[in-house]
Image (cartoon, rainbow, N blue to C red; front, side):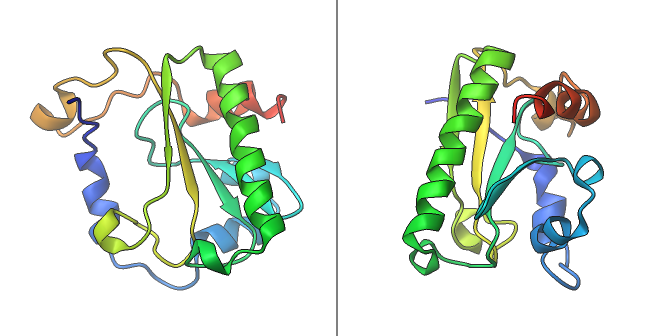
Length: 157
């Protein structure tokens, strides 16, 4: 079994969350490039993860602030999966990954850094993309800056 370790995220997960939900904040800020929002749909948006597990790590987020899938409407759930499929296709065509991790962390014990606003993670994967750096040097090697990746992907949405 292979593991995707992300020890650099511990600081974020354990940090005190202040104020309002950052996903709701960026949604209403209308500064998409600054906030790394790649796409806005009727009921969902997608955003580059500022703390990526891997290059190309994107989150698909319902516009409505909800902590549970069962609280989403059918149209929200449909758009959530439709946008996820579209994002996967864009990443496939632009980054040529060999696979994907796609999923949600629901609840703190499941690894949710943000428990109150559900979101879906899409993480492109390549053979050999994990190495000793996070464990030995407490560092993650990300091959492309978020700014460059945003510029490359934005035109696809």
